[in-house]
Amino acid sequence: MFPRSLFLMRPVFKLTLSLLFLSILIAAGYFIPRTVNFTLNAKQDDPKEALYYQRLDNSQVQCLLCPRRCVIPPGRRGFCGVRQNIDGTLYTLVYAKPVTLTLHDPIEKKPLFHFFPSALTFSVATAGCNLRCKFCQNWEISQARPEETHNFAFSPAAIVQAAQRAGCPSIAHTYVEPMIFYEYMRDIARLSQKAGIINVCHTAAYINPKPLEELSPLLQAACVDLKGFTETFYRDLVGASLAPVLEALKILRRQGVHLEIVNLV
Image (cartoon, rainbow, N blue to C red; front, side, top):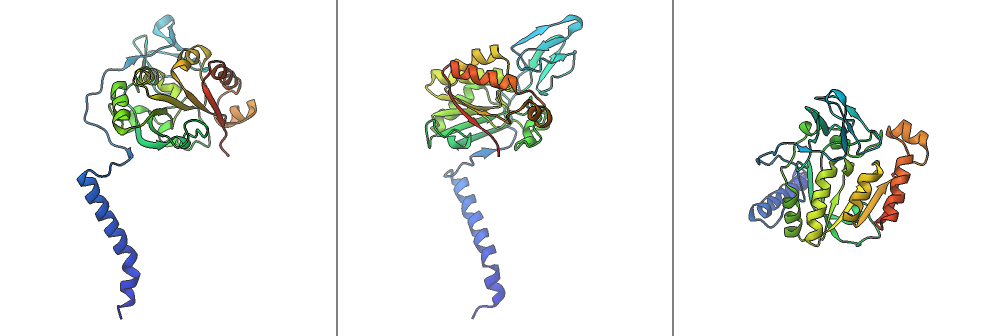
């Protein structure tokens, strides 16, 4: 008979062997982790000028991307934390700097349930958000500034190439509010559309009509996270307003984007 202590240690042996086997597979190139969270040693490009803003007096700018319409003094950022006024010009600080890239993500995880069921997607997200949901599931990255996270250096072309190599038929802009990395998402969508790759986004749809109308032709599907059903809920728990979201839903519908609405329970 073996000592009882040896039987108690069997789960530890199994775990050790499993980890050893996994390490061998990774070293041999048979397994690639689906989510990677380290900073690539690649050159970070200078900030890219943002779209949708106007210059004001005294080198101030007003961002016109989302309904907050932030008036931003020189050297300061908007509410989202990723759009900064540098010497009277508004720049996006997250262009080509995703915080998360996930290969072979089930499209149902977006969650899109009636669009290419069981298809795999390549998920992209940056730091930042233009909402302050008290129940946010991804607060570690959505409520962080880009300098507080470990980011990749990945151009739109590199994203499309990675999706092609991974055999992903779609790219998903997700995990945080993708509208805050609007310029990055737009350029990815333009290139991927030419490559025959579908673009989907999971969004709270807190965006102004004009930028959404110009983005919609590049999107094949949108999953809109409707946070609640009253202005009071949006004011108290989201830090925003419901009316612009309802207008965005109408725009997506009119533009012919496959639309699914979800609510976190």
